Image (cartoon, rainbow, N blue to C red; front, side, top):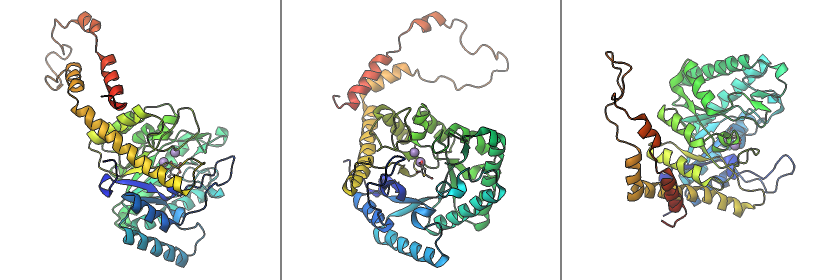
Length: 382
Ligand code: GLT
Ligand code: MN
Ligand code: MN
């Protein structure tokens, strides 16, 4: 019942299951894994797809013929296993050239080089059959704010996106962009610090239809925000092009924990928003195994992400079917009368003249009971 199949649309990035356990204080605890072996492992555990940064597969200084050989070998692994290539992205954060940003760098040549590198990564993603391209501006930010103009950053980022949309149209690719926000790390402050900032930028672009968001559980949680609220907004606005699922404790560094490992309740509501809201895009686990794990532990981690999602999904189903809960909700969420339309004759009336403010203020909402029912349901005693 909790065994994933490709129909569940679960994906992993090469950098997630390929994570080697390095952190700022310690070296790698796991050996490198060949991307081809990762694809085979994903097929074995029932994942649907795989995602990558350009340099997860092709080293930054590979020659064109080396690149082609690597891509051919990877494509064969996809063909052999049936694993889909789903999302491509570009690494604009590891190489020292990007130490003060890529699209928002103060140096025009670096901004142009960042665009060229992104275009090559888009070509790679298109060649592999991907239709979603994520942009995470990890280094687009500052510590020394005296050195940078945050309004220029917005303008430069917009300029870069406009250029990339033009490129995709020009090539005839069927590719959309998904913007991923993060408040900080690796920069002291990253521009566009939450998904809401990107939702506000998108309508100012030349091709807003081609651009949506890729919210990440850990990133909004680092900022103390409700992840499922922003996911709901993105979904309602038709902008949830992709999602990065993981887990995180508030106030910590970006932990990228196994999905469902920390915030059970928030994860439940997230899955509820995605399932009830009709999201049918990929479900990407942008997480990694604890540093304590060997390769067997990595596999357990990946299986755990998918299993937990399916368990939450089943709990959502139970919640939606639970008679007592639904009866309570019916009482709480009074049925909609007339849809709200502007009344030219009496625009300020809105409710009946005898609307009883005091009675409504005094009424109990039974939320204590409802929330306890949810707890019982989630804990399996219901
Ligand atoms: C990096 C980051 C993630 C982004 C990836 C896409 S790379 O691991 O922490 O949140 O989604 O560039
Ligand atoms: Mn992410
Ligand atoms: Mn993260």
